[in-house]
Image (cartoon, rainbow, N blue to C red; front, side, top):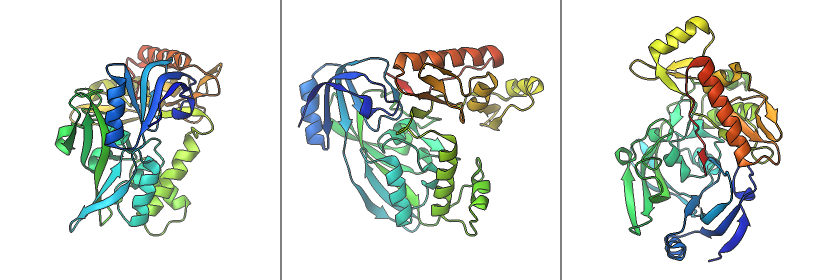
Length: 336
């Protein structure tokens, strides 16, 4: 067990913000985790996975514990499903690629999402018409205070749009160690969302497969989103806001091209990227903090931006969208 002091967290967050942690250590097992929790005592603590949904606004005056638990295995199957358990420290995209290679269907639409497996249920990650809740079976998490393992079922997690009990009710109380997914033996192809159908046609795909859908999603994401290895970012910075359908219809009268999707009884989900773009932010840059030129939902660090500069840019965007459309944007990225 190695504990580092005043370590730069720049390599450990996809925004590449150069801040330091008072203490930093990694764990690959529950035993090491327990030792680190004892060493940290009651000091401030942050558990880090892939660092892809976080924005550091300053040095972290406490313990940063990096989850490096690894392993993927088939633990059960029935007539319709494979049950696949993945450790929280596994890279999400590599897990998806593993599932496709094995013929486990259901996560292909979630290809190339940055981050690790452990963050997937916390955030209820989603893309192209699929969310984690659609393929989730259960997870095991370690209670920080009580020092015990707890199993969470689908119902226990209270999944919502980019929400779960781990972001609100149980915030900072549990450390997710592994997730078990229920994946189909017979694929149900979800190609109606976004430009998947057009991309499959462009690729000349004659027969649908989970591999082809994954490749289409990867092509689309790469064409629109910056690679964090080249340009610091955390993917979509804002959630798509949900508003009353009546309000949406009123906005349509003034803004006929506004983009929205049905979101349940009397509600419409509005494309945040469209709202931001209409306010003139797409491609905006001030110093090294900017709004990506191809996708307005993505805020970027072009080199040496501080977390505070990115936060200020996001606040300016939120205020301008509120002023123009009367809609409040909510950050998807966690500020630390």
